[in-house]
Amino acid sequence: MNDLDALLALDTPAGRDLLAEVHGTDPAAELAVATRLRRSHPADLVSAALGQARLRQRAAAKFGSEDAGRMFFTPNGVEQSTRASVAAYRARRFTELGVTSVADLCCGIGGDAIALARAGIRVLAVDRDPATAAAARANARVLGLGDLIEVREADVQEVATDGYDAVFVDPARRGGRSGGAARGASVRGGGRATGGRIFDPEAYSPPLSWAVAAAGTAVRAAALKVAPGIPHEAVPADAEAEFISDGGDVKEAVLWFGTEPGAVRATLLPGPRTLRSRQLPDPDVRVPGRYLYEPDGAVVRAHLVAEVADQVGGGLLDATIAYVTADELRPTPYATAYEITDVLPFNVKKLKALLRERGVGVLTVKKRGSAVEPEELRRKVKPQGPNTATVLLTRVAGAPTMLIGHPVR
View 1: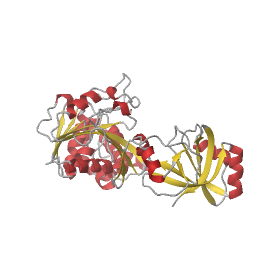
View 2 (view 1 turned 180 degrees about the vertical axis):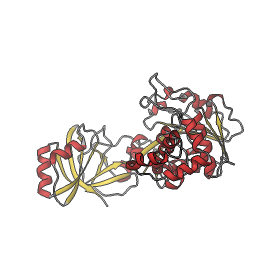
View 3 (view 1 turned 45 degrees about the vertical axis):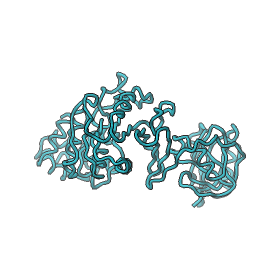
View 4 (view 1 turned 30 degrees about the vertical axis):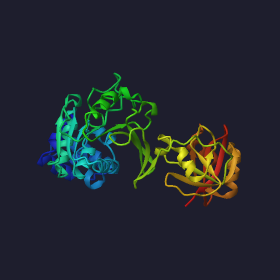
């Protein structure tokens, strides 16, 4: 049974009853549950239900257990869909721009469409993959949003978006064995990704240039979701680039049109807290001070480390590494602060002796600009004792260095 047939079979009264019966099944008990249920249900339907139950359990981290427990997913739909908190933030931005209708192109299983509809926005959700479109349609219905979300199975490059205030495009950013996904398909939905991530924006499906042209048709605004590692030189001059993290993890970058051309911002969720570029010069390199600041990943991706250094009155440990050092503690939401007790040249034996002397049994290892793997270092130093410490592996003026300290609470 393929993904589409499985979704259609599960989205029936009998299929939904079976899903309710396998809800919360422990993976260790799957074989026993499957054996029991196959006595009274078709084997392929039982397999589909158990597979969907696993997907719902995985999706709970993104959508919350209540929504995920009712929604329908494809394997790639879980992996590639937008986290609900990020989608809700973006929907709020659209409403603040006066948007009341959005064409969501490459909609996947409908995560962004759901957030937009919950913000009161009418949505045309388009995806080329049949199973993906079926999942998005079912999700709009089970979440009570069917009146606001129209799902259309089509190639996004053949869909007219006139009549909508805004356009949102989330191109596929994973390649297949042949070098790319089918143009207009959404790998965050049902298309199976057999390759790795795509870093060239023109290799997206559809390519960034097409998405930018589609953005130009929007009446009020447009947003294009791109990889967080997009080269800044690839950002169009008339776009605002926003880099978003959630709980400290970088999730995505978005190119906004119709907002602030040329602006760059880092947005941290929950919050939101937004740091804007002031086009500051690179900070000076200086000797380690009492405090070290580790900028949030979105700040680093947005190239706004200089703005953080300016906030805390600090400089860089190394011109090529995003660690900021300062003599005073100036709390900022855009970086984690550590109080540094020791600065040593990188040496495993010295680190092991120091940790033993201080009774450190819980060791956090962080690194920027170091080839050493944290788990490997932890195994070598064998921390033991009741105390905790953080070691930051980096370079100071080009020299491999260990900074030992602890987070500022």
